[in-house]
Image (tube, rainbow, N blue to C red; front, side, top):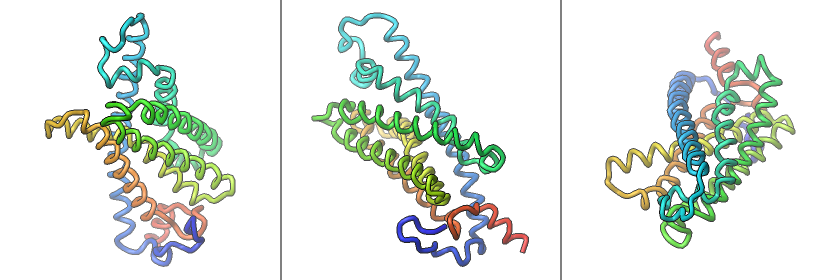
Length: 258
């Protein structure tokens, strides 16, 4: 696939399927799907947990929320509309996202892929804006305290997610298939970062004894860096020559037949 910024072909275009790249790609693909399954499970259970919390808390009138709820949960209760606008689209993203990267669906059910893609971009935009509203303006720990780092991390991740979704949309409108695929990978990696953050937070809280007040913002940055790096590595390994219309699996299979 052509480089999306300069138009120059990928450095690996001349020997894309030379040994050992096909095997490396297969192994990493398997590991990637397993990691995605773990993150999707984590993200979906977190969504249902937060939804159950909101339904329980809003079912009754709470006179003084500050006396009943902890500083972490009260943000979602006080801004429940933004929270629902984050949870609902987030659930759809976690359900639709993996399907968009399945080659068999793109080949056999192209209309579904297109409509699911539009839904994905719309839900991703709503989720980024609503999550950004809570995380930027009402971070855990307060914007003038420990929460400032979370606010900055949320700003970066939310804005970059919106940029990726915009680029994914505009590139497919121009029939730049390779660029579209890459921006979609970046966007999904970013949206999975919240699940990566939850995994990191749980591990570090149980193994280090450091409080959530310190770890929450730190794991936001860590999750963003890890997911962005993983996305870029995978993009680099699967960037095919040309305009990206040829899938890396097809090229590797063709090279094997030869």
